[in-house]
Length: 184
Image (cartoon, rainbow, N blue to C red; front, side, top):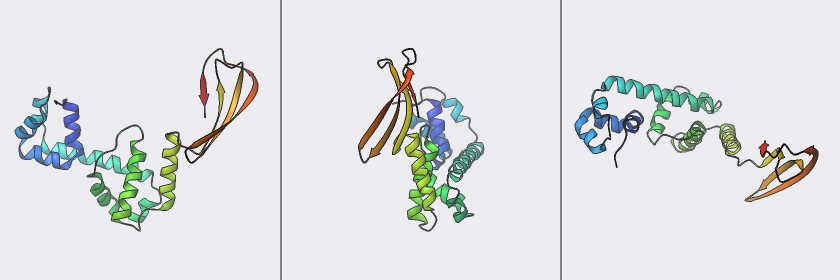
């Protein structure tokens, strides 16, 4: 399977062992990837600039995680950068919630590396924010219009374990011109 140049560059920036292999023998590294196009672009990369860019990305990632851990970060003090760099070697998160997933994974990793460091309130806050953003919260309230119903309705949904109970309350408002929408 061949790769595009953006994916290959992403590997170089996010994985220190890939960078070391690339710097040691560029041609062997490029041959192993079976690039579609762009091998010349990667061949011309300066090793020092590549390492500097990787450091910048790691620092940005660490700062995003530190922002989500306001109680744990001060507990680590100067060790934060070193511990986060060790953690970051385990992989990079993906998706639009990657910083929250990264914060949760870092807290879990810290439980093994420095058990005294993670603050339970940070763990709860990260889990609650992930649950809220992924729609897994325990309660949900909203206002809905539905094309098949003559009236609007308000609803309250509560989760208990795997079950979800929903209470619908009809409102004396006409449905919104056949549009279907909901807000929480």
